[in-house]
Image (cartoon, rainbow, N blue to C red):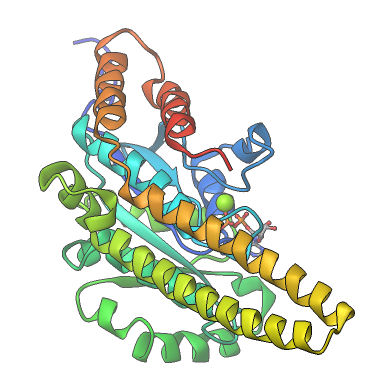
Amino acid sequence: MGLHFPEPNVGPEVLLAVMGPTGSGKTSFVNLASGTSRDFSEDLPDRTADIQITGTFHLDGHRVRLIDTPGFDESQPGSNDADVLQEIAIFLEAIYRAGHKINGLLYFHRITDRRVSETLSQNLAMFRNLCGDEVLKNTFICTTMWDLMPLTTGEDREVELAHDLWAPMISKGASMVRHNGTEYTARTIIARMLDLPPITLQIQQELAVDNRTLMHTSAGAKVNKDIQRKEADLESLLIEAREDLQRAIEDNDMEMIKRIELEMRQYERSLKQIQAESQILARDQDQEIGELARRIRDLETGKCKDPWGTLRWAWQAVSAVSRPVK
Ligand SMILES: Nc1nc2c(ncn2[C@@H]2O[C@H](COP(=O)(O)OP(=O)(O)O)[C@@H](O)[C@H]2O)c(=O)[nH]1
Ligand SMILES: [Mg+2]
């Protein structure tokens, strides 16, 4: 008998998605765990973050790929939740239709964050709406930045979060893990997720199976509600400004008139922007997504060496087409 080499693992790839707010350490983690050093965001100077898929890497006999996603962060200039949701949704629907299932989810949180800001709770709410309760058993809440504070302070915060913000997720099967910024912990966390069975995220079910438009998914409905609230706020600000303007005209206060008119123009601009966001949610992207899913399958059945790398570009092309001109 000759030498025996272990069979290369040819089973399906383990696909893990990384989500969470901007700055929580997602991209650093993905790069560490996969051994990727390239920062894809450099390719796209106008976008702070885009969906990225790593190349395949091997861990404990499994082939693994990580999906890095942008955070919902309206405080960043040029970022709005409808846009980010659309990017993530198109991508998740396309890979689902192409027959790729995600095995696990990592939700990132900086342990250094002293309080749960609006951005943090918005991100968590979007995560819950995107993924649904069924997949929480495959979800790891990953805390980062442990090296930036005393361990005991971090531990106290972790206990608080486990009993408060994350309690509903933990009670439905989510686990908590700590990442201290090293390759070792990154890979140890991934190693715990290798045997997770494939899952369907809520948004994949809603879009690809139930054929809903983005607006009528749980995540889309949430963003839409936020948009409507903002729209109503701006409209009442405009009404107030009109009244102020009327008074300023009666008083013949030229300086005040100018100031109010400037203010009103800003409100109107914001209102237009918000209305454009709501159109993103209503658009029917079925054809583009079907086309993208077909291309993913073609890439895989062809002799393409790195279908996912190519997919990234295919996906960007589709998303550039479907993204409205700002
Ligand atoms: N001290 C420390 N810094 C980190 C850690 N993880 C990420 N960072 C830094 O935090 C910033 C945001 O990280 P990034 O991976 O871009 O976050 P993302 O927006 O979630 O992708 C970067 O400057 C990273 O270098 C960590 O565990 N410890
Ligand atoms: Mg990132």
